[in-house]
Image (cartoon, rainbow over all chains, first blue to last red; front, side):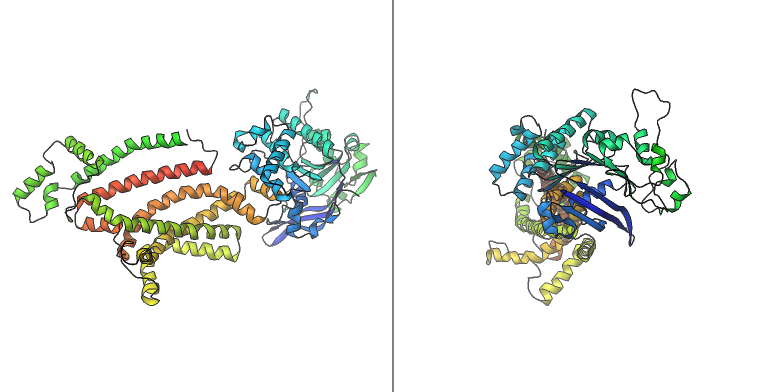
Length: 324
Length: 315
């Protein structure tokens, strides 16, 4: 039994009295000690999916309209707000894209870590503070005993993201959701943060859901990958299988738009067109207006999910043709 | 912090000197001979000449200023033409009322402004928010003299709960229960300012609520009330603290109207009466006191700012 099972998740945005679907029929599962990557362009629904799992959609215009999120033996969509909060920050934790703004500017970082600990663990201030120093040491902040009293603005972006990781790992979560954790960081710092996450995972057996728009980051860190396009999973497979046998034209487009340094190319290939806005009604396959392989059938018929290999699913009518 | 405070206090000196020159020149901006004006229409030329000598008005102006400044530094703000008493004593007699009135007003502003603002922000978009925001808009727009008269009509004349005017000193019979005389005037004075604080707390909290660190706080599994107070309000307070400085400035001018409506023997009414009596030394003295007060309040707001926001460095 997987730790996290998302099935047929539907998310919609309420605007002007109507519900616009933004995530449709998303299903995947993540086991303990596994890293699951979700990749896609801005607006494809990958962040909303992660916020829905975490339980952070509450109070916004966005809501879960269908499907289920099963986590560690419990159905999250059926839990009360209070039961949900008991899980948030404890069994399930999240780190975000913007380390510069994700910490509260008016509190010392130590106090912010202590807050998480004391929320979920029966600890004295003293114990929580000692544990916070250990956590800062764990995420390789130098001189943790001194840095614990720093304010966020006294730290660099990379250090702040480490603090975010320390805070997320404070209560030994079973699942860590990382929404673009390295996007705002320098490349060298990116590598350090990813290595740190992998290291913590191997020590604690944490499952990770990694959201990224960067195929390079995904290839390096994930065991399984789902490629999302306009609210649906276009293609999903184990990382090795996906990169050796890309089937969906959108996935191939994403890979081709990454510049290769050691090859001299005149043109950088890009996927033509743009991501459709959520209020555009599209018939058939959502990708057909941008797809080089599109035929008449793609305009009228939305492809169902089907298997192309073991554990490798796609939503495309003609995928095999292109990969051959 | 201490070094910064001392530096700031020293920096007040040139500002104060500049202000003192303006206040000093005020008496010379009055058209005509100050001595003649001070003495009024019935004065004889001999009396005017005597006062001119007494006030040193026949000396060069810079010498007059230095003389006046020297006196001010020793606490001598001159003599009231009307009361025939030292200006400092005249101002002092109004100070008790004004200080108690201002304090009570600030208490109302904090007591009403902050909690209602927080509720309004956390219930954003609901009927609670509409009622509180609408109410705040209403009270921010009502002129103080009008509100004061209505409060007198309802609570003093109609219900008879509070006295309608005057203020016996707390050292008189009744002691601190005499503070009931200040309840209606302080509520009148507080209403528009509390309304502004409500609107500001609400707006700042809605701003902060959109910030990323609030999402982090929610992801910790904290109770929404804890997120609202400890994370959202605490950050919104930085903007609100600055507004308290402005609020105080507004109180000084609004107090003039309120003290007049409620016949309170405070500094505000003293100013109005002194202007009508052409008691220039008293007007001069009050302006000087208000200038010093403003500067001190400004300094306190800056210090509070630094306390509230660790990103502000005091150098």
